Length: 319
Ligand code: NAD
Image (tube, rainbow, N blue to C red; front, side):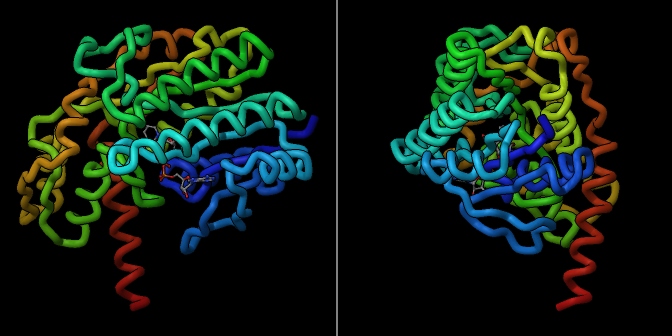
Protein backbone atom coordinates (compact mmCIF):
# COMPACT_ATOMS: atom_id res chain seq x y z
CA UNK A 1 0.00 0.00 0.00
CA UNK A 2 1.25 3.51 -0.78
CA UNK A 3 2.53 5.44 2.26
CA UNK A 4 0.09 7.99 3.64
CA UNK A 5 1.33 9.55 6.86
CA UNK A 6 -0.80 11.39 9.41
CA UNK A 7 1.02 13.75 11.79
CA UNK A 8 -1.11 14.70 14.80
CA UNK A 9 0.13 17.81 16.64
CA UNK A 10 2.07 18.89 13.54
CA UNK A 11 2.28 22.58 14.57
CA UNK A 12 4.20 21.86 17.78
CA UNK A 13 7.93 22.02 18.40
CA UNK A 14 8.65 18.45 17.33
CA UNK A 15 5.79 18.30 14.82
CA UNK A 16 7.03 21.25 12.76
CA UNK A 17 10.52 19.80 12.29
CA UNK A 18 9.36 16.21 11.89
CA UNK A 19 6.76 17.14 9.27
CA UNK A 20 9.44 18.95 7.25
CA UNK A 21 11.68 15.90 7.41
CA UNK A 22 8.86 13.51 6.48
CA UNK A 23 7.97 15.71 3.50
CA UNK A 24 11.63 15.79 2.39
CA UNK A 25 11.78 12.01 2.60
CA UNK A 26 8.39 10.89 1.26
CA UNK A 27 7.02 13.92 -0.60
CA UNK A 28 4.22 16.32 0.34
CA UNK A 29 1.51 14.14 -1.21
CA UNK A 30 2.33 11.38 1.33
CA UNK A 31 2.18 13.55 4.47
CA UNK A 32 -0.90 14.98 6.23
CA UNK A 33 -0.05 17.55 8.91
CA UNK A 34 -2.94 18.03 11.36
CA UNK A 35 -3.48 20.01 14.55
CA UNK A 36 -6.21 21.82 16.46
CA UNK A 37 -4.53 25.15 15.70
CA UNK A 38 -2.80 26.90 12.81
CA UNK A 39 0.78 28.11 13.29
CA UNK A 40 2.08 31.32 11.74
CA UNK A 41 4.32 30.86 8.66
CA UNK A 42 3.84 27.09 8.71
CA UNK A 43 5.36 25.70 5.50
CA UNK A 44 2.48 23.34 4.58
CA UNK A 45 -1.32 23.36 4.69
CA UNK A 46 -2.51 22.06 8.07
CA UNK A 47 -5.81 20.19 8.38
CA UNK A 48 -7.82 20.68 11.55
CA UNK A 49 -8.32 17.35 13.28
CA UNK A 50 -8.96 17.03 17.01
CA UNK A 51 -7.44 13.79 18.28
CA UNK A 52 -9.91 13.85 21.18
CA UNK A 53 -12.76 13.41 18.69
CA UNK A 54 -12.62 9.78 17.63
CA UNK A 55 -15.17 10.10 14.79
CA UNK A 56 -13.33 13.07 13.28
CA UNK A 57 -10.05 11.15 13.46
CA UNK A 58 -11.60 7.98 12.05
CA UNK A 59 -13.07 9.89 9.10
CA UNK A 60 -9.77 11.60 8.29
CA UNK A 61 -7.86 8.32 8.47
CA UNK A 62 -10.36 6.61 6.14
CA UNK A 63 -10.56 9.54 3.69
CA UNK A 64 -6.76 9.85 3.30
CA UNK A 65 -6.06 6.09 3.39
CA UNK A 66 -3.64 6.65 6.25
CA UNK A 67 -1.01 3.92 6.71
CA UNK A 68 1.14 5.50 9.45
CA UNK A 69 0.37 7.83 12.34
CA UNK A 70 2.84 10.00 14.24
CA UNK A 71 0.84 10.93 17.35
CA UNK A 72 2.58 13.98 18.83
CA UNK A 73 -0.29 15.83 20.54
CA UNK A 74 0.17 16.12 24.31
CA UNK A 75 0.22 18.55 27.21
CA UNK A 76 3.89 18.69 28.29
CA UNK A 77 5.47 18.39 31.75
CA UNK A 78 5.39 21.95 33.11
CA UNK A 79 1.98 22.88 31.66
CA UNK A 80 0.58 19.52 32.76
CA UNK A 81 1.23 20.33 36.42
CA UNK A 82 -1.02 23.41 36.15
CA UNK A 83 -4.06 21.31 35.10
CA UNK A 84 -3.35 17.66 36.05
CA UNK A 85 -6.75 16.07 35.40
CA UNK A 86 -7.37 17.90 32.12
CA UNK A 87 -3.83 17.02 30.97
CA UNK A 88 -4.34 13.34 31.79
CA UNK A 89 -7.60 13.44 29.82
CA UNK A 90 -5.92 15.03 26.78
CA UNK A 91 -2.82 12.80 26.79
CA UNK A 92 -4.60 9.51 27.44
CA UNK A 93 -7.81 10.28 25.53
CA UNK A 94 -5.95 11.22 22.36
CA UNK A 95 -3.63 8.19 22.55
CA UNK A 96 -6.49 5.73 23.09
CA UNK A 97 -8.37 7.27 20.16
CA UNK A 98 -5.30 6.92 17.95
CA UNK A 99 -4.76 3.29 18.99
CA UNK A 100 -8.41 2.36 18.49
CA UNK A 101 -8.68 4.11 15.12
CA UNK A 102 -5.41 2.50 13.99
CA UNK A 103 -6.52 -0.95 15.10
CA UNK A 104 -9.82 -0.72 13.22
CA UNK A 105 -8.44 0.77 9.98
CA UNK A 106 -5.71 0.17 7.40
CA UNK A 107 -3.08 1.88 9.59
CA UNK A 108 0.06 -0.28 9.73
CA UNK A 109 2.28 1.61 12.17
CA UNK A 110 1.95 4.16 14.96
CA UNK A 111 4.70 6.34 16.46
CA UNK A 112 4.18 7.50 20.05
CA UNK A 113 6.84 9.69 21.69
CA UNK A 114 7.39 9.02 25.36
CA UNK A 115 9.72 11.04 27.58
CA UNK A 116 12.39 11.02 30.28
CA UNK A 117 9.49 12.18 32.50
CA UNK A 118 8.63 8.50 33.06
CA UNK A 119 11.60 8.35 35.46
CA UNK A 120 11.84 9.63 39.01
CA UNK A 121 14.59 10.42 41.50
CA UNK A 122 14.41 6.85 42.80
CA UNK A 123 15.91 5.70 39.49
CA UNK A 124 19.63 5.49 38.75
CA UNK A 125 20.64 9.06 37.78
CA UNK A 126 23.44 8.38 35.29
CA UNK A 127 22.92 6.17 32.26
CA UNK A 128 19.44 5.34 33.56
CA UNK A 129 18.52 1.83 32.36
CA UNK A 130 15.59 1.36 30.00
CA UNK A 131 13.80 -1.24 32.13
CA UNK A 132 13.86 0.84 35.32
CA UNK A 133 10.92 0.61 37.71
CA UNK A 134 8.70 3.58 36.79
CA UNK A 135 7.08 5.79 39.43
CA UNK A 136 6.79 9.15 37.63
CA UNK A 137 6.23 12.27 39.73
CA UNK A 138 4.29 14.40 37.22
CA UNK A 139 0.96 13.87 35.50
CA UNK A 140 2.81 14.11 32.18
CA UNK A 141 5.17 11.30 33.27
CA UNK A 142 2.20 9.23 34.46
CA UNK A 143 0.51 9.61 31.09
CA UNK A 144 3.70 8.65 29.21
CA UNK A 145 4.35 5.58 31.41
CA UNK A 146 0.74 4.46 30.97
CA UNK A 147 0.94 5.26 27.24
CA UNK A 148 4.02 3.07 26.81
CA UNK A 149 2.14 0.18 28.39
CA UNK A 150 -0.91 0.78 26.20
CA UNK A 151 1.42 0.68 23.18
CA UNK A 152 2.71 -2.72 24.29
CA UNK A 153 -0.84 -3.90 25.01
CA UNK A 154 -2.07 -3.03 21.51
CA UNK A 155 0.95 -4.75 19.99
CA UNK A 156 0.52 -7.93 22.00
CA UNK A 157 -3.28 -8.12 21.93
CA UNK A 158 -4.03 -6.84 18.42
CA UNK A 159 -0.68 -7.02 16.59
CA UNK A 160 -0.76 -3.24 16.04
CA UNK A 161 2.80 -2.11 15.26
CA UNK A 162 3.24 0.73 17.76
CA UNK A 163 6.77 2.08 18.18
CA UNK A 164 8.03 4.49 20.80
CA UNK A 165 11.03 6.53 21.93
CA UNK A 166 11.66 8.16 25.30
CA UNK A 167 12.87 11.58 24.21
CA UNK A 168 15.14 13.76 26.31
CA UNK A 169 14.67 17.54 26.12
CA UNK A 170 14.61 18.50 22.44
CA UNK A 171 16.40 21.62 21.20
CA UNK A 172 15.43 23.05 17.82
CA UNK A 173 14.94 26.31 15.93
CA UNK A 174 11.80 25.64 13.83
CA UNK A 175 9.18 26.31 16.48
CA UNK A 176 9.05 27.43 20.09
CA UNK A 177 8.74 24.73 22.77
CA UNK A 178 5.31 23.99 24.20
CA UNK A 179 5.61 24.16 28.01
CA UNK A 180 8.15 21.55 29.06
CA UNK A 181 10.86 21.54 31.74
CA UNK A 182 13.70 21.69 29.21
CA UNK A 183 12.26 24.73 27.34
CA UNK A 184 15.01 26.91 28.83
CA UNK A 185 17.53 25.20 26.55
CA UNK A 186 15.75 26.66 23.51
CA UNK A 187 14.93 30.05 25.06
CA UNK A 188 18.57 30.65 26.00
CA UNK A 189 19.59 30.62 22.31
CA UNK A 190 16.80 33.05 21.34
CA UNK A 191 17.86 35.48 24.08
CA UNK A 192 21.59 35.31 23.27
CA UNK A 193 20.99 35.81 19.54
CA UNK A 194 18.67 38.79 20.21
CA UNK A 195 21.41 40.36 22.37
CA UNK A 196 19.39 39.96 25.57
CA UNK A 197 20.41 38.40 28.89
CA UNK A 198 18.72 35.26 30.16
CA UNK A 199 17.03 34.43 33.46
CA UNK A 200 17.01 30.65 33.82
CA UNK A 201 14.20 28.81 35.64
CA UNK A 202 16.59 25.98 36.61
CA UNK A 203 19.70 26.14 38.77
CA UNK A 204 23.01 26.32 36.98
CA UNK A 205 24.16 22.76 37.75
CA UNK A 206 20.94 20.90 36.88
CA UNK A 207 22.06 18.26 34.38
CA UNK A 208 19.41 16.85 32.03
CA UNK A 209 19.59 14.68 28.92
CA UNK A 210 19.13 16.74 25.75
CA UNK A 211 18.96 16.07 22.03
CA UNK A 212 19.23 18.27 18.94
CA UNK A 213 16.06 18.34 16.83
CA UNK A 214 17.77 16.87 13.76
CA UNK A 215 18.70 13.82 15.84
CA UNK A 216 15.17 13.64 17.31
CA UNK A 217 13.49 13.58 13.89
CA UNK A 218 16.12 11.20 12.51
CA UNK A 219 15.46 8.80 15.41
CA UNK A 220 11.69 8.76 14.82
CA UNK A 221 12.08 7.95 11.13
CA UNK A 222 14.84 5.37 11.74
CA UNK A 223 12.66 3.60 14.28
CA UNK A 224 9.61 3.65 12.00
CA UNK A 225 11.61 2.32 9.04
CA UNK A 226 13.35 -0.47 10.98
CA UNK A 227 12.22 -4.02 10.17
CA UNK A 228 9.51 -5.11 12.65
CA UNK A 229 11.57 -8.09 13.83
CA UNK A 230 14.28 -5.67 15.06
CA UNK A 231 11.89 -3.90 17.41
CA UNK A 232 12.41 -5.82 20.64
CA UNK A 233 11.20 -3.11 23.04
CA UNK A 234 7.43 -2.59 22.74
CA UNK A 235 7.08 -0.14 25.61
CA UNK A 236 9.62 2.58 24.67
CA UNK A 237 13.29 2.90 23.76
CA UNK A 238 15.65 5.15 25.71
CA UNK A 239 17.61 7.41 23.42
CA UNK A 240 20.34 9.71 24.69
CA UNK A 241 22.02 12.70 23.16
CA UNK A 242 24.12 14.57 25.66
CA UNK A 243 23.80 15.56 29.28
CA UNK A 244 23.79 19.33 29.75
CA UNK A 245 23.45 21.93 32.52
CA UNK A 246 22.36 25.58 32.08
CA UNK A 247 25.95 26.63 32.77
CA UNK A 248 27.16 24.49 29.83
CA UNK A 249 24.89 26.39 27.40
CA UNK A 250 25.98 29.69 28.92
CA UNK A 251 29.68 28.91 28.53
CA UNK A 252 29.17 27.75 24.95
CA UNK A 253 27.16 30.88 24.05
CA UNK A 254 29.75 33.19 25.65
CA UNK A 255 32.16 32.16 22.88
CA UNK A 256 29.97 33.89 20.26
CA UNK A 257 28.29 36.47 22.52
CA UNK A 258 30.90 37.73 25.03
CA UNK A 259 28.43 40.19 26.60
CA UNK A 260 25.76 37.56 27.20
CA UNK A 261 24.87 37.13 30.88
CA UNK A 262 22.74 34.60 32.75
CA UNK A 263 20.93 34.74 36.11
CA UNK A 264 19.19 31.87 37.89
CA UNK A 265 15.69 32.05 39.39
CA UNK A 266 14.62 28.45 39.97
CA UNK A 267 10.82 27.98 40.00
CA UNK A 268 8.43 24.99 40.24
CA UNK A 269 10.14 23.42 37.23
CA UNK A 270 13.27 22.81 39.33
CA UNK A 271 11.34 20.17 41.32
CA UNK A 272 10.39 18.44 38.08
CA UNK A 273 13.95 18.53 36.74
CA UNK A 274 15.30 17.12 40.04
CA UNK A 275 13.29 13.94 39.46
CA UNK A 276 14.73 13.27 36.02
CA UNK A 277 17.89 11.44 34.97
CA UNK A 278 21.20 13.12 34.10
CA UNK A 279 21.70 10.76 31.16
CA UNK A 280 20.15 7.63 29.65
CA UNK A 281 21.47 4.21 28.70
CA UNK A 282 20.46 3.92 25.04
CA UNK A 283 22.44 0.79 24.20
CA UNK A 284 19.31 -1.21 23.22
CA UNK A 285 18.27 1.36 20.58
CA UNK A 286 21.83 1.25 19.23
CA UNK A 287 21.77 -2.53 19.03
CA UNK A 288 18.21 -3.01 17.73
CA UNK A 289 17.92 -0.30 15.07
CA UNK A 290 21.28 1.38 14.78
CA UNK A 291 20.55 4.56 16.74
CA UNK A 292 23.44 7.02 17.11
CA UNK A 293 23.24 10.73 17.96
CA UNK A 294 25.13 12.88 15.48
CA UNK A 295 25.22 16.29 17.20
CA UNK A 296 27.16 17.42 20.26
CA UNK A 297 26.80 20.78 22.02
CA UNK A 298 29.24 22.62 19.73
CA UNK A 299 27.72 21.27 16.48
CA UNK A 300 24.19 21.98 17.67
CA UNK A 301 25.02 25.49 18.91
CA UNK A 302 26.58 26.43 15.57
CA UNK A 303 23.35 25.58 13.71
CA UNK A 304 21.05 27.10 16.35
CA UNK A 305 22.97 30.40 16.23
CA UNK A 306 23.08 30.49 12.41
CA UNK A 307 19.36 29.73 12.00
CA UNK A 308 18.14 32.07 14.73
CA UNK A 309 20.41 34.89 13.57
CA UNK A 310 18.96 34.57 10.06
CA UNK A 311 15.44 34.45 11.51
CA UNK A 312 15.81 37.60 13.65
CA UNK A 313 17.65 39.53 10.91
CA UNK A 314 14.78 38.76 8.56
CA UNK A 315 12.27 39.87 11.19
CA UNK A 316 14.10 43.19 11.68
CA UNK A 317 14.33 43.73 7.91
CA UNK A 318 10.59 43.15 7.54
CA UNK A 319 9.51 45.13 10.60
P1 NAD B 1 4.08 20.96 21.59
O1 NAD B 1 3.30 21.33 22.80
O2 NAD B 1 5.03 21.93 21.01
O3 NAD B 1 3.08 20.50 20.44
C1 NAD B 1 1.94 19.71 20.67
C2 NAD B 1 0.95 20.02 19.57
O4 NAD B 1 -0.22 19.20 19.78
C3 NAD B 1 0.46 21.47 19.58
O5 NAD B 1 0.66 22.07 18.32
C4 NAD B 1 -1.01 21.37 19.95
O6 NAD B 1 -1.82 22.36 19.32
C5 NAD B 1 -1.36 19.97 19.45
N1 NAD B 1 -2.54 19.41 20.11
C6 NAD B 1 -2.90 19.55 21.40
N2 NAD B 1 -4.07 18.92 21.62
C7 NAD B 1 -4.44 18.36 20.45
C8 NAD B 1 -5.56 17.58 20.03
N3 NAD B 1 -6.54 17.27 20.89
N4 NAD B 1 -5.61 17.15 18.75
C9 NAD B 1 -4.63 17.50 17.87
N5 NAD B 1 -3.56 18.24 18.20
C10 NAD B 1 -3.48 18.67 19.47
O7 NAD B 1 4.83 19.58 21.94
P2 NAD B 1 6.18 19.01 21.29
O8 NAD B 1 7.31 19.52 22.08
O9 NAD B 1 6.15 19.18 19.84
O10 NAD B 1 6.03 17.48 21.66
C11 NAD B 1 5.47 16.55 20.76
C12 NAD B 1 5.46 15.19 21.44
O11 NAD B 1 6.80 14.81 21.78
C13 NAD B 1 4.64 15.15 22.72
O12 NAD B 1 3.96 13.92 22.81
C14 NAD B 1 5.70 15.22 23.79
O13 NAD B 1 5.28 14.59 24.96
C15 NAD B 1 6.86 14.50 23.15
N6 NAD B 1 8.15 14.92 23.73
C16 NAD B 1 8.63 16.19 23.49
C17 NAD B 1 9.82 16.58 24.07
C18 NAD B 1 10.40 17.96 23.84
O14 NAD B 1 11.45 18.29 24.39
N7 NAD B 1 9.78 18.79 23.01
C19 NAD B 1 10.54 15.68 24.90
C20 NAD B 1 9.99 14.43 25.13
C21 NAD B 1 8.80 14.05 24.52
